[in-house]
Image (cartoon, rainbow, N blue to C red; front, side, top):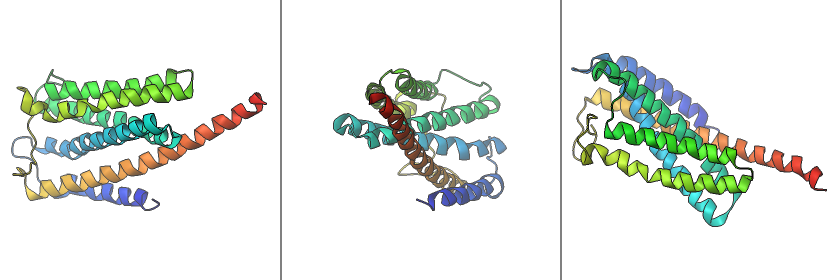
Length: 221
């Protein structure tokens, strides 16, 4: 795991170079297309974080091992971070290209709902008087939030929407090779960054729990 941080940093640097200098501007969007190299990886890694949070939450509800809760808590925080980043970059891109900062589009609304659900997940954990009760409630909310991901992903197919469909499918890749390379490198960079952050945060959560337990021990005697 010691190499993950430097690898993420190197991949981010390579992705930044490819996004800003090696890939061409889009024929219709011009240089605004470069926001895609942050927006799309942030959205994809938010999906990944939801998956990790959901699996860890399920394992915690089943086995009640604190280690699963540390991972679930860390991944939930990163869902908020990466979903918020995807929403923010989408709004910055939408203003010049769509002419609006926000519209009640199916994918935008379902993504905002995911953001709010995971903010709620963190709130119920923080507001619970008992740590274990907070962890259980947060696990349930995280699992409910995971149900929103298929809705987000397929919303562009199920509903009449302003958001464009995916440029990369099993059958077709509708972008220039330079753009595809920049997108894939940035996707790898964000995935490595997620792996580094979730590991670091889970370790910190374990240390915080141990310190809290140590502080309670003298009172219990």
